[in-house]
Length: 463
Image (cartoon, rainbow, N blue to C red; front, top):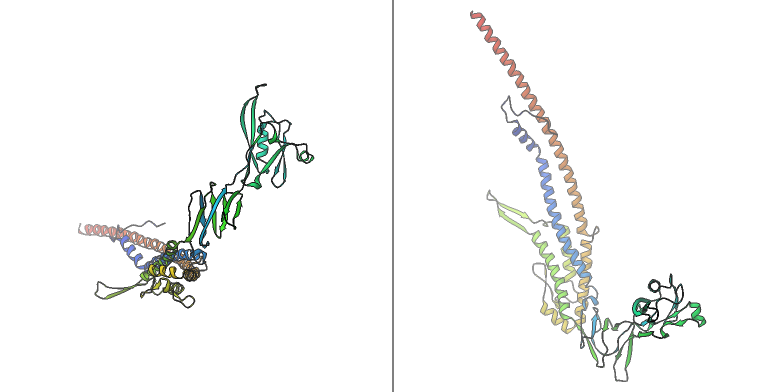
């Protein structure tokens, strides 16, 4: 807290301005520290911007460093009832299939009833593989049966469906619909009234053979026929409507059966591959451009007519130069003795790179495997160089940023200490000038007293 001061009441001095001037002179070191902190903050911001771009480049290159990552595919179908997806690197070619059937889930329904015929209800589900699951409900109520089935691991779901009134008793009747939890022949099931022991003993009745019960839909696999009508004809089945890797890396999904062949065609996606290469080179060029712009030295004429040379934030920064050199080498060094310029990655006179789409597409058409391998190798080198620079904590630039941030914190501590020191100095000066004003006030009072006494003596002597 600043002490109270008397601002020149007696002396007439502007002590507040005088104190501020003295403190301003003494605060010279603090201003230097503040200037250093501002410069360091600006440098950190520039480093962080560059580091973010290099980290993004590293992530992009990492996704392209394998051959499959650089082999995008397009896939088409001659019938919308058959769709296909192709992974990067999938085999190129075409295949004709006939969709013989689609996958179905079994749905079966019981006869109409008002309640289960035993209390509590006991039933057993037998799977297609012969596994038995015994289910015991909390009572004979159909809601209890449905709840017990749906909380079991029998692989079926149950639903109670209204079925009118009993013509004799007038009671409400319901059926229980059982549906397989999955499609395909292996998900088929049977349901018996009775325990697993009863089923083994042959005394448990099949619920769906009772009068009024029925199998509404039977379980079935999806089936596609390859090379239909030839000696090589072959059927492929799937429990779902999706056939995984029917061609290497190609998944087929069917939605309807039909007698006509459907042709699936897988081709190289040249446009996507070209875009991937262009974006990688573009990201590199953006980084080199930023480094060059922030490293540029400019010269202007000052007010005194002399030249003033100003270096960019990165001028003289060895870490940034090292990062730039690593990335440029990774992008432009030969691969298997051949220059990347042969696939359209060209180094320019000003130390950056550019992408020549025409050269890239020509090379891709002539030797796609070499282009893919070359680009994968370049992407791998760029990913490694980028990680060495931008990896959190361990990257060269990341570590430099952390060190500079610690330095800024230290400068901030010194500035805060100067604030306390200057405030203490202000209090001291205010006390000094206040004491001076008080002393002058006393002297002025004494002077007035002596003047009045002298005047009194002079009056007495003349009388």
